[in-house]
Amino acid sequence: MDLLITIISFIALISLIVGIHELGHFSVARYFNIHVLKFKIGFGKELYSFQGKNDCKYSLGIFPLGGYVQMLGENVLPEDQEDSNLSKKSYVDATLNERAAVTAAGPAANFLLAIVIYFLISLIGTTHLGSYVGEVNQGSLAEEANIGFGDKIVSIDATKLDTFNEINLILSNRIGDTGSVKIGFIKEGSNFISYSTVDITNWLSKSDQSNPAQSFGIEPLVPPVIGGLLEDGPASRAGLQSGDIIQSVNSNSINSWSQLSKALSNLPNETISIRVLRDNETFSYSLKTESFKKNNLNIGRIGIFASRDLSQWPEEIVINKKENFFNAILFGIEETYKFTNLILVSIGKMITGSVSAENIGGPIQISVLAGSAAKAGLLSFLSMIAILSINLGLINLLPIPVLDGGQLLMIAIEKIKGSPISDNFLEHSMRIGILLIASLMIFAFVNDIVRLV
Image 1 (cartoon, rainbow, N blue to C red):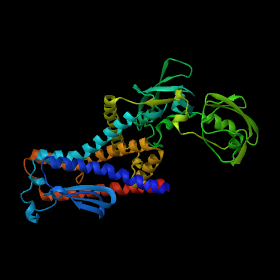
Image 2: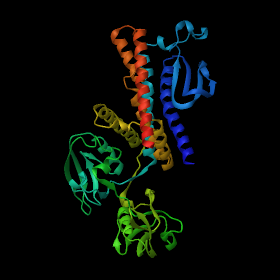
Image 3: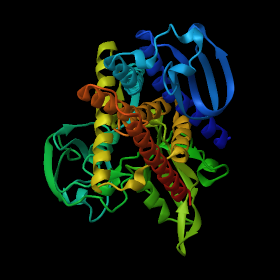
Image 4: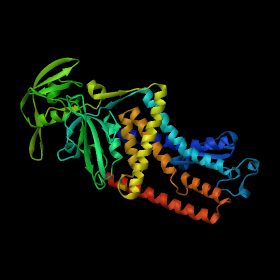
């Protein structure tokens, strides 16, 4: 079932962002009355096709990893055109400005899609994990900054924040940097903001870059809320329920899931007392823990799982965000800009070697992420679509022949030169572009395989 969800979500995701990209080219070409011969999503054998208005053929290919819009005059010699098309406007008949607009419309459509998605997400409303610290790793930068359990991070490098995802996003911009990071935080029990600065040198340039907050030494505050129970486990037999908030174990106060886990781990095969909060009422239970072997040690457990449903979490540690129509538009633009900037910075750091190229993912990685996002819910899946749409838009703007950015570069050269570029130059540049894209795809695919093994 998980595999089926992954496959379906991957196809839906890729088809949408590619379809929107090609629709951008198609719509602007039609706006300038350039005749479109074919609109295709996917490559390879056609699964479905039909002839639309204005003699344009629409089709779906068997491999949903791309698509194209073929306009009259593109890759076709004038003498090879059908007589019925001689009176229609071709791509080569269009002005340079019109051709540039058609070419740029694909990436622009991807950015617009991201703005629309973030707009809808903001309008619907979302619940986020607050920026509270649940644990600080020993010897970490966070410990050096004097950040402790229960503290709330409110800013990083003068950028204000209130969710844990924002901590990761802002710190992602500092990967590979040398300098200092300024953290603003409110100590537990305080109402005042404290500031601390820590020095970094080529931060994470040769380390795991997948979770910057964790690498900085910060773990999120996960409350001791029961999300599920092992059937016929000690907790289930005793009467504990999903949604219960564990307040104490053997009269020792519990404030986070990590504290609960450590407390139970140290009590294998022992009778313990647990106090929980349920619907604003307190209940006490007595039960005997089980144990399992880990590194030749007996570890205690009671058969419960942490809740990932933020609606079950205490209101004081979650952030609910919902905007009105106009603020939602601004939010869509801001989020799209934020992720566009992050991706551009990351690409720049990959080129300089500050960020590992191992972060480049191919179709396998995308399918895994798409499946996970789909299982996490509609809003997570929409966010994944927005991020990948921004990625596709930016990648297509790279000045590589066969990509939109390369075509825009050729148009710019032709405009400056004042005459068409020679066929010989175009042919060689296309070959180089195909080689570069093929090399990038192979590298990304190898990265995917390495992740799996």
